[in-house]
Length: 210
Image (cartoon, rainbow, N blue to C red):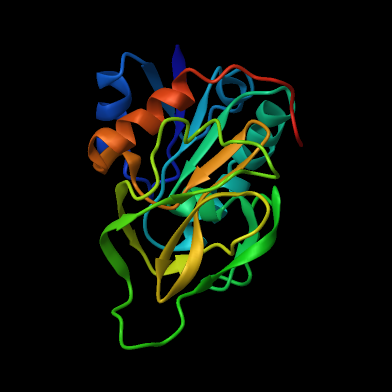
């Protein structure tokens, strides 16, 4: 199984590539090859840092190539900022649109006595997605821990596959059709993260949701 990993110069590429290869995936990295993305078997968009960095996806035409891939049923996984990009946008960079696969927007954690960013291990509350068990989180038990580092988060909606509580409940994972995202870093989340990435690599398309 070949996985096309998108490099928009803000992703945590090294750890993601190492983990995918550990699981037996063939990986290819691109920052501008539209044909490679459009013809991909799997697409992963890792990300750290500022939401504004996703502007490069628009500037290079990768946003359109990703849309084309998703439309033909390619399984897509966004990690951290890569998940946030699946929304309409983020208050971190209001002028920069996201993919818009999910119509809501990401916002910063509310001010409180807790520290922001949210960094460290926290547990997952896995839940059905629109009444159907999550395929990405299959086999993940309630309360399993994963590793987070972020200041912005997505809202809890019908597309939320897992909720985590820090200051307030937020979407730790989202899933609609062949498009998935995780706010945490599965490549740094031990056996739970490996389980989730195995599910992604084993994903068999059941049709597309564009």
